[in-house]
Length: 116
Image: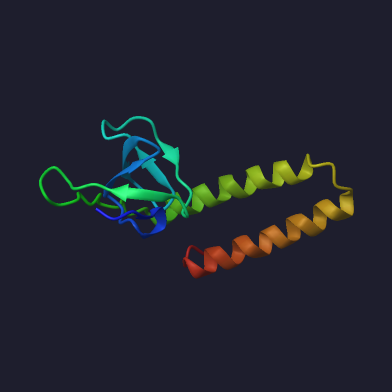
């Protein structure tokens, strides 16, 4: 098969990269065929697509995330980001400006996902 960029490879496709075989499991991640050894692959990486064993590439079924679970995850992420910004060494005004911008971004994301 012809070589191609990792970003163009469909999720679930097996491929060879840097001498090892992988399975693409997300837009930026791959894992070894036995399910171990996850790693990030640059979108621009040139990979060699491989034929699936049964002639067809398996397509993982995405999990639907309930909105309350997504909201909780976003709240935890927001709290972690706030802790990082607070500990960043910025002066008080810088922390407030940065946290204000982050809060607005989170609010836009929550609205676009219709979480609130």
